[in-house]
Image (cartoon, rainbow, N blue to C red):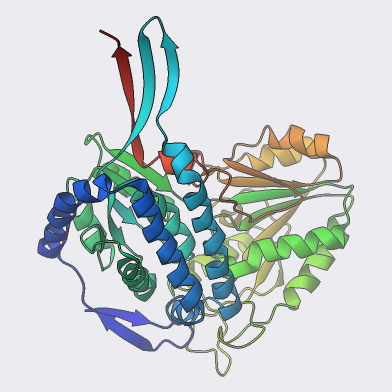
Length: 459
């Protein structure tokens, strides 16, 4: 049995039956048999089913938010924001699927017609994440189902109950249980899932696990998509209001306790406004309410995974040993009422440099390093000094200045005067250790299909 623990209290809130090699094989074979019939359904039918799933989410979001809080520790208001944000994301896929999947005539001359059509991949494995299970899950299974695929869905063991609720809502909406099937368990269950002869693997999670998955399926000639981590930099130029910039970036760094692949993880500030920015940033962080994720106004809840506390402690120890200054935070919270939870103080480190792991390795927690730079050129070098390439941002009043720098940024997504933002209209992708492939946008619908080329000559 898989035990589900509430990270805010340390108490077990549920026990769920885990899959094993035999049950996973059985689920795969049922999905393989069921997929052709699902693909044969009209797109209109599949659209109607997903629209009914959306309605289920909208009707049950209060209950679903509380379940999400109980297993991830995400503050209730942030859990509600995720569910509210899911609705327009589903709507985007519904609105754009038909036009994206419509066969496209690209040539018609001298009796020869050339057409591009789209066919589903078949049966895909979707190994999802815990930090935004509705967002990152729906980025995959919604377009996958719309395009006619069967999905073997493994929610993170830290968001298992949420994954099971997603499945029940899809079944209620009309998706056959053999077409969308949950696979429950830890990493060993995920490894067993990868042994099945699926037609595609879609993973969201850490770079280390992503590389292990790539190695596991190497040589199988299947679709592999890896949405991995980031060490996302932002540069604050000398022409902005440091107080306003600090407010936006503090939220970008600390929202969901920093547990986001696109959270701000490195900040570079022009030396001319460095001190006022730092002062405003620290003031902003001090104002964040830490506590029970179900309590009104809580902004910082517990970390979902207890082992991450040691990662943060190690980064802080490394930084201070090498000369960084701890401006605020830096320790696990053990006060009355929070001592049994995975709480960690929001932490700001100053006088940092790239010899420190906090500026190089993904933190995935409420911790940030702020470094002073002399000019745009130095900032650009430091922003690109990373193995990751997910997002990068520039705060400046000058759009041309921002576009010049962001054009040089080695990142899949770039921001001008904003951060930690995802749009269903834009592709979500990364370079380097941030992964391969993409989700979202119309490209994120096409990625679940194989284009077929038609050469049609009149007799």
